[in-house]
Image (cartoon, rainbow, N blue to C red; front, side, top):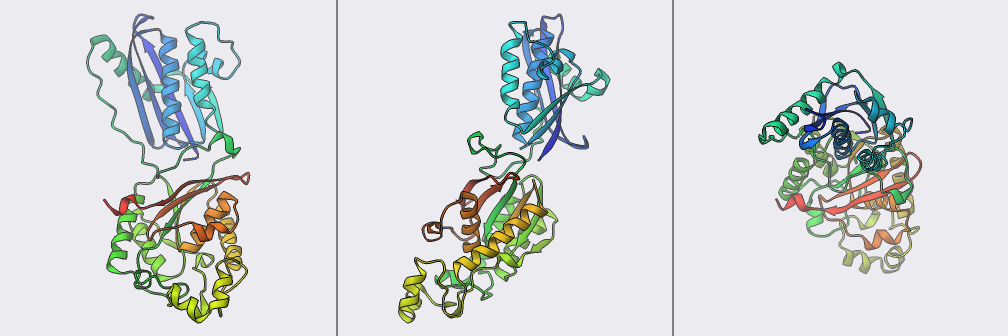
Length: 369
């Protein structure tokens, strides 16, 4: 969710008197309500309630993953103070202004616009419901949540990374189990189907990811095991499966279908070298350095095509490791040390300024539920 509109209001009956606030988060075109907040404050002033409404609205915007926020309020005081045009003098306002500014710093950009009360009717209604509760002592029922669940690990960019802008979030899903993975055999360009367990894993992963907000695309390797895993999700979220050839698994050449022990016994010298040198290719196959080149191309294509969006990428163990390697900006030793389970989920984010972060690695919690 790159950009949202926050409308907030607050008031009291008596100033000071029974007070409350309301806030609503809309999509950027104001066509959809993403979240609502309202709360009774007891006895407070109008200005305190208005600031509390702003803070609640900004916090709700962060909860839905917004990076840019347009704040619209009918409080001239709050808009001018938060814009820096008016000095904050009242001792009750100073800590509230600082708190709101601190929340605002978590976004890439926040703007403040004054609007007439008639254009702030949604937040005004929520604030009045809160003031009614404050005046009568009635219990204020929770507003039904409208925020869609985000994938585990997703949030605003950590400040210490220096990353700027809305990231392209890649949800990296490894395909489900196949007969070759059951027997722990090299499985590259061969095209085994999913086992019954693999199908169940794909279904479980799809159910887990289907609740993710704003999936822009489901992209997959051309091999059947990735395509079938991807289709389980695509069908749920009414998206096509987009095939990207660069995401295909490593070509293991003559080792295809062999176990680790069999490949080591039949090709002892090259197998030993391959385990420590990414420039070495299996006989008739593909070196990891070559794979990294095309995976880097895939990463660049995804960032260009889906800038600032969330994309589910269904592929194989090696391409996922390499996408994580690129996000972490580390050497090839990661390929040999990182374990990724079948149907596991990892999350990497790539920012427009070249920054990146890894949010999650090898999550399989949804497979046991």
